[in-house]
Amino acid sequence: MRIIILGAGLAGQLVVKALRENASEAEIQIFSAHSAGFYSKPSLSNLFTQGKSPEQLVMKDESALMSAYNCDIHTNTHVLSIDRNQKAIHTTKGLFEYDKLVLALGAEPPKMQWLPESANVFRVNHIDDYHKFYPRVHNNAHIVIIGGGLIGVEFAHDIAPFCHQVTLIEKMPGLMAAMLPKEVGSALEDALTQRGVRVMTGSDLSQINDQGGHVSLVVDGKQLIADTVLAAIGLRPNTQLAQDAGLAVNLGIQVNQLGQTTDPDIYALGDCAEVCGIVKFYVAPLRACSAVVAQNLVGGHQKIVYDPMPVMLKTPSYPICFCYLTAPKTWEVTVDAEGIKALAHEGDSLVGYVLTDKKLADRLRYKKAMASWLPAE
Image (cartoon, rainbow, N blue to C red; front, top):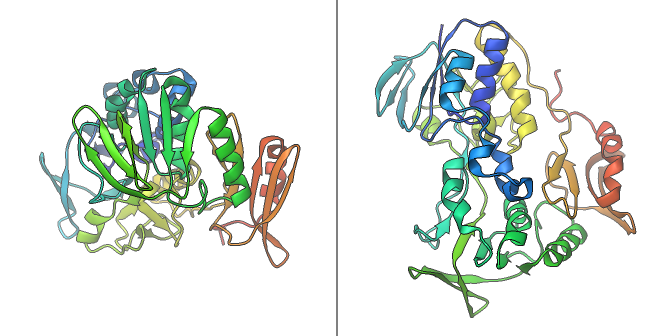
């Protein structure tokens, strides 16, 4: 059996690992538009806190992966199209046929007309990006981060002690306003400020220009000068290749509980996939999908199960854990000396929680109180 995996990130590599652990003798080829070393992508936003360089983050290089999993990896190779009738992919290295195809295409920051493509403006979504950004973090640097969501907050927390100044700009009234109660966002802002971050919430970024040696931004009508800008403005699933092939696409590539797209010989998982209507850009759902997809590729009929999956924000100076399928509109918030507890209910059912500081001790208890997001039956 010939299995082709598009994408060499964590999703694709976990599928290969599971296939080999299950003693599959399939011929496996992996295609990546980037390098293909094995590393934890979420760790990019707390590399300095870990005291690591980008090189130290890579646990296995491409040669080690090919040897360990007996597969071929094609790096820096772009997939141009999928021919479902011929069961082949067209790439910049030629045509390759498959029996089963796995789409682990990930997600990318959206293109914004107002954000210049320049040497001083960064979007860090791969380790290749981070290699270029890493030298910009030093004691004399003023780095502006655009976006006060999860990634922007984690990067600001991580690099602040290693820069002259870090400024975090967010247009919403509070940090992570679409994800957390305002009380938690406010406490997080205080924690980042104490760490040395200049936090500008409710701010209007009206202009950004790379002027060679620095970047000029106009924020709330005033000029702000930075050495480097990091845009943390969210991710969008990479769906164009699947859409061009005639597969069903919504926010992500639509897959059923077996991990199959609308073509039963093509599977999708990770940040590019929408599993029974659910899109989650986290590691836990990716791991759940990879184990099932690996079994089903070789004749299994396992189902993806999503139990509640708590997310730990990588801000150790102010720890936060949150868990919900979709962000609740209403929270029941209590604040005391041990932190903040926010719960959300639908009727008598607990559908979400956010815990900070010492309140995190109760996170497993609340997780057990919640219903499965995607049960087996």
